[in-house]
Length: 200
Image (cartoon, rainbow, N blue to C red; front, side):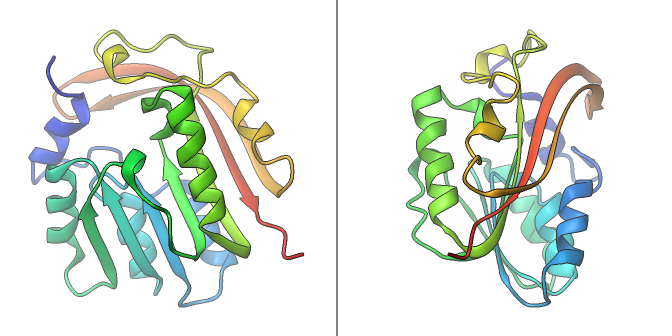
């Protein structure tokens, strides 16, 4: 397969490729005051970015997928979301955000690249701000159709160790199965962390 399964969902205007906003992003929206700036790294078609914008947040969002960003822009309407096409590996992370989300992205990079991106995410978060990160781990092998795109599966616990100096509000790890538009079925091992940068 020349492109990953999610591109087929992004290209279908009627498809909902990854479902509703993630539960930890919904909780984050309740925890933050109204109006702060949020960055969504690897936003796809915008399930988290559009939700946060609908709740009054100012959202910057980027993804390497042209089709994903085009779909996000169509769905944004008048919401305060600025979306563009960019590879996370090339992003400068020069902004300062109240929260940065990176959901299902970092395992796509080789370990040295993903470490650099994660460092940029951390640096680009204001003191007192939050990161919401979700990655796939090697507890379950990459599905055959996605293995060519998964260059850096994490070890379970590795993501949480990257936030040992932050206040970790949530750390969860589990195995789940899903189905994407086009009939693609997968089983993944996921680790997610919600962590708050110290203010001192």
